[in-house]
Length: 397
Image (tube, rainbow, N blue to C red):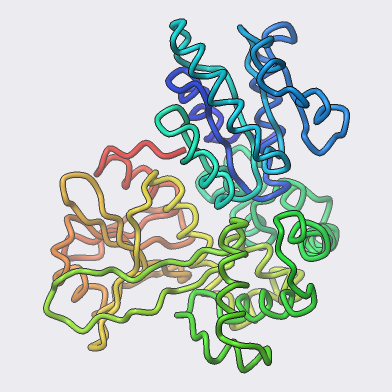
């Protein structure tokens, strides 16, 4: 069993909010984490409903009455996007309990996409709900996996892929994961898109991992319109499978780039889309550096616990892979290197000066921590997470 850092955060939020929403792609471990929490409470103090099961969905025919009858229990609603109308009933029940002095720990809802849940809850549960995203296993959670850094990078962080018996079995699982999303799950979220075209688009994003989005080139490669490319990209972002990292915007007297950078969020999915099976295959592939960069950025963004993240790039060549806008207006600058002997690029130092960053680090695949001059340090992913939290007091999962 992999011990996820998010479990403690979910437990804490349940003490503070009536409703907690745990979001993440399928197979990432949301159900496992929820069952751990309900088992800790005991069968008499919790209820678990899987809304993909007709029997459990039927219990909610009169949702408000059923949920009100569960007073004193933590109710878990899994795959809640299957019945978005439940949010209205939740609001009624939660408001009644708040009036009665019950302020927290009533409902845990699980969902496989962000957009629908955010829209529904913003209309009905504002101020009553906390959102937590469960990502695939992060690089800083390595000690709980029983694997090493290279295995986590190669296979990605989906638990069944990471813990597979061998690399071939892991790759097969990821192929099936991709196929299932394309053939089944995309339609569940109301998108009528050709599965084969979406697969080709997803694969093109893997080939261009970490590059700035060129909508015209993607559209030409797929033989579709730029508007369709935008729809495909929006869908994969909403399904929490792709990250669109926006450029930093501010007045620094420089010409800043405007197009976002796009990452397939799990490195294992990147490698599956490109048919990369082993570490030897990965080391010899052009995507290796960008794949490592994406894996590190996902770890740091998740751990930072803030949406105020961006990359910085000017037309003159200044570049920072990740800028975290921290508390009190501070900015943290982060560069990612796959080299075991990292150095600091001139563009990074210029970017740090442009932004007047309060600190800068280079994250590399090693354990030793050492200075690189000019106030910049080199460190591994786990130390980078600790550095971010210590500098800015963030408390991400």
